[in-house]
Length: 168
Image (cartoon, rainbow, N blue to C red; front, side, top):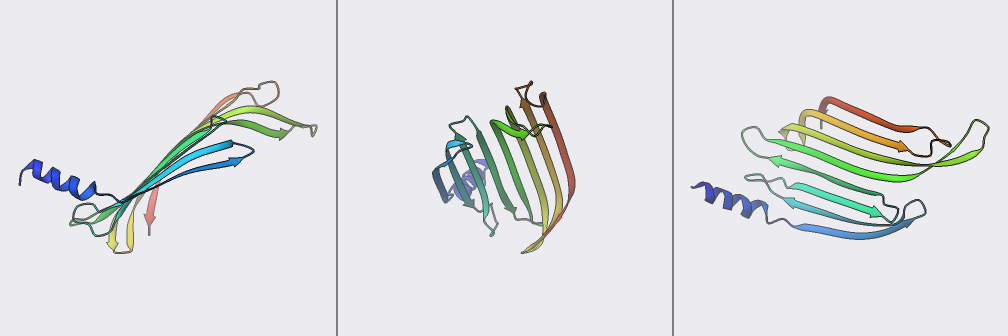
């Protein structure tokens, strides 16, 4: 078969996704009104019987807070069947921090938290319900406190990562 026929077969197999979507409004005093949407698709990779999933969720608030999250699991067939779990998220969350000073007086200050994280877990499937593999996690967060006189001063940045194993 030609490369074009292989591509067409892949598109026919993968692109016929049953997709479920939801749009939702919520309210809370901290965020005001929040509007979000979520979509999930299930599909089979070529020559694979276990369905793979892919999800995307996002929301934003009237206080200019927002986040987006994508995750899923891909099941791959072949001589050595394997799977890949992945998750990725980003948020930008301006808010007010409420605390107590040393004299037990309440105070508040504006801060903004930006955060991104990624998780990847490639695994070899041993049997239908068992798999082993590795895990990689990455987290970055930047907070910025703007009311320097009444709160902790300035920006703070955090970077963490980890490498490990997974058995499930």
